[in-house]
Length: 174
Image (cartoon, rainbow, N blue to C red):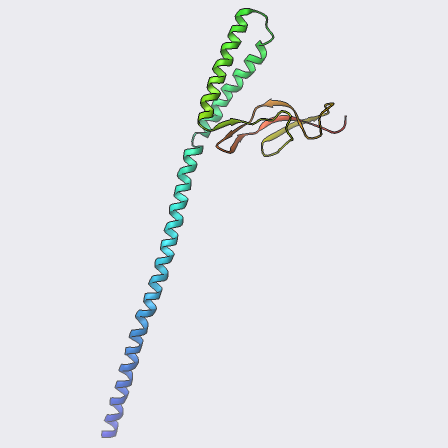
């Protein structure tokens, strides 16, 4: 019986030691798990912060794109009007054209302050990122794929094309 009791006591001690080992290993494992969760959440938060900052910057840069696109139609109408009236010889009409040109220039300068730039197309090589080809035409003295006419000016807002130039591109054969 004594041997039985000793055996039971040894078994109890072994179980207690095993339980103690499990207890010491479990917190270490849980601690590592919490650390990895913390690092994951910290990285996730940092990515969220950067993404939110970029979105705020984009809203600041491009939030006015819709209204500027609408204002560009007004600029186009100013340019069409002056083109139609430039050939007129009447002094009053010439003064009106000069006034419209001044207002148009002032409007474009104001839009330029907010990041809007005209795309310079005439004489440049065709670039599909900045130009929309309406047709091709042979023009003597021009190289192939050179912009020879511009139907509508294109514009860039803070480095992003908001309206490509509508152009005619030269062809290499008649």
